[in-house]
Length: 294
Length: 267
Image (cartoon, rainbow over all chains, first blue to last red; front, side, top):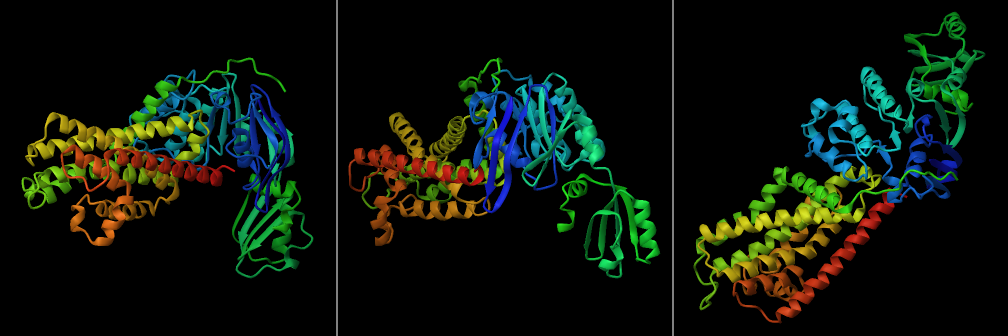
């Protein structure tokens, strides 16, 4: 359904994608994971035909992604896209539905997105989370075979994110294909059957969520220090990565207890100490072994 | 490559155009800053400048009244105003809010979008024109024959078409913040220099020299002729041809500006 064949994309000096090949089949629910700037959005843009690859080719249903016939079978949620504030929710959903050959009923699309109460509101009066829901309604209103969601839950609180993903999951259960990008591991875990990890323009892993998670186990230790940290303070500790900037210290490790014990023993001044599960961005830094470069 | 057996259908174009045009229309209409200035401004100018001397001859010995001259002027000013200012500014704003980003990945053809936007602007221009005409007839006491009213209306509407192209071009060339200033800076002096506010022979000589090259001046000949106001040289056929040339030129400029914008954003 969706194919990238040796796609490379350059923006000036930046190699956003480097010879990426992948195939997404009908019914797949795929999460593209990676730190910011990894190339996820670029990959989606190439799949959609809104950006041309520098080399290689993208195919949607075997067609050029710019082909109206291909576009008529997809639904899209993009980061930072705008919609006219002076239209009402049901007006714009009904408008977008008219772009597609076999659209859902307007009310149904709005209901899938959980926005029924706001159906008659002007778009400008929606909150950030409601606006994301509107984008979901616009993405599903054409009853698409493939749904592309680029960082769909940005700016949502935890509860909003959970409900949103549940709604996407319900749509996916209608034997639809979903491609979403995220940097939240939980999102991929909740929704996807397949996770593609992208880093620095390369696909570095393509597997089930469970096996990806096993690779990014680790804890984050964060604290601030009033006395400047020296290299000797961290020397010999079992760290996967470390970041020190302006007295803010972030360490990633598989052995948090041992690291903390040693830091206390060395008399390192620690304030606002936090120990938490690694977020994905840090975990990827460790996973791709270039954490110390930053 | 696996071929997909599902039907490869696309949506019918006509309902898409109708819905898009309606959406563009209410979008414009619900912004008071746009709808009031576009619809009321020409009538307001007529009230402020034209009312007091509406029944007086345009100049000594003329059989055309100032009211008739100024009605025709404001008719043209009003419809072109909708295209250049309303259009240019709203398009620049939409680009500023990245509304084009999402549209770009829907199956909506770009041509449908442009046709719909043009239709909506034509509708607003028509409303502005009707409000002005009713005001001029009822309050201003301007008396025209049925044929003159009709000729004025269709010529004004036709003359607005090249400015659709200009509005599009400005909308794609100007940034959202600079658009109001840029469009006003271009439009207001041109309207003045074309003799829309004061007959050309009251203006300084250098403006009289420039005027014949301005599209609003060419359009003005056509609407002034509709109300029987004197034509300052040249045949109407030439004015029509000039308007046609401006239409082609402005739409080519708009196409270039559009491509330039798309190339920046989507490559």
